[in-house]
Image (cartoon, rainbow, N blue to C red):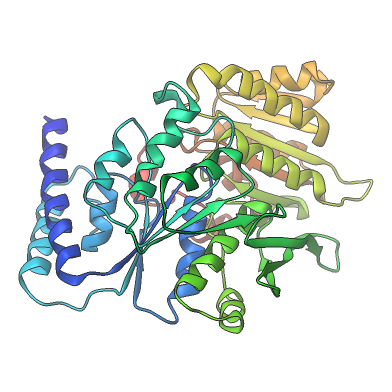
Length: 432
């Protein structure tokens, strides 16, 4: 019954969304890929919203139902039929009566299973498509035969680009570079590699007077120009790529160099994505708990490795299961363990799949006495309280279903700010 109800709801709100798009004709920026879609969406919004009336997907509304909800400006009704009736009515009113509507929609477009994006691209025709990193073994690959099949699914939205549209794609991921052949529209690349049209350079972590990491600095280079960008409160190249993509979108909408720099000066990264959070005993937590894929975990560990510490400090990785990897799961978890052994002094794993992370770390030389395994993230967090020493750097990561934010909650210095700082603090999540 729930499946039938969902199909009916999806059909109605999709129908309303098609009419709304035809009526109001907003420009559409569609973001796809496997890593960094939400951060990229937020960065693009930051660049555009001072110049245009812009609406972005709320949270991670990137599915067959999330995209229409954004177009109609409605909330997720979850299992509440009254909320869905309200949403349908609001969509109807938007169709029937003239309303003020955004000039630009910034939409995430995700693929959990084969056919997801193909179906959406039958009616969603973007003006700009931003294709973020995919990586060797992306999240959701479990439901596809190969990584290439997943990329082909995501490429449907590229094929849906308007003839006058623009493709903005990740230069550093060779799998993504190939999607540029799917369209004859204008194309811009972004990344750290030399061939990137929008290139990042001179990236570095900066520290406070107590030598704690507090953010990053880098430059955005393009067309012979260079823009300095500073990000406070977060670390990792995961945040640089979205700003490069947003810079390319700014060019599409004729926002100049000075305005771009000004718009990015107030950019605040989203919770759960390499956020720096004060921990107990004056430790530093790097909260990367929003979700996890192998490429994102390795990026996080690379960032942890780059952080400078004193002799009395240690680096701790707390990593939970990476979900939806299918036949690649065992090897990818072991590979993360190998990487952990190169970076950290202590490893804490959470979940059945993450046991292979522990195995990989042990096989790569990390002492068994420094590896701890748990099945529950909150229990792991309580354990952390006893092993964290002053000044330690603690990196926390895992797929959303393993709820690693609960481990962060146990060891953050200001748990009363959880609603502000952590992901999935809404009542609907608390009940899960």
